Image (tube, rainbow, N blue to C red; front, side):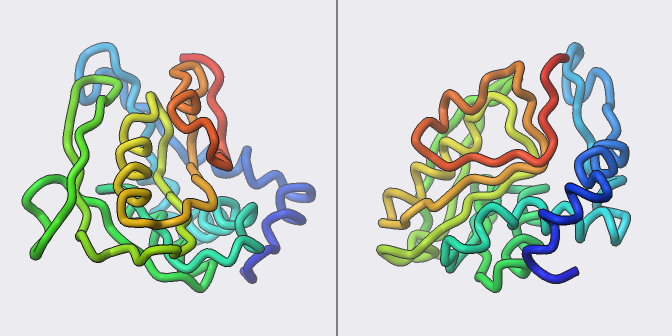
Length: 189
């Protein structure tokens, strides 16, 4: 599929419902009471992965993105695919102790606890045009931490793209000021 074709596909073939149908919810994972949205069936399907990457990249085709940043671990998969779609590079944000060399770090709050992320201190050059990508927006803590690190390195965040947004958790409230796009929005638990 060529970059930019997703807009017409969404109108004619219903990309969002097709992608939504490839997701599954795993109840009580990773803790009781959590409904984990599993994207693995979607990314295991070649057409599903291609459609997801195109849909996530489409709003940012004309933003001159030079690098896509994706958070561990499912953000790696989608982020790399979106970077390819945009002709951009890819930077991984990882859990502590996984990157060699000098890193910067940021703590954040999850829907079900707290964690910490790191990225290489030289991963983003000052003024670089960055698209932030992750598979899922829940409370916004992971992406907020990623954005803080990119900004601290002088990157210009041109947008934030998610495959799935759990709107009822109000994660976009932590991302005010960014051009946020979600392919699939889930309004209720």
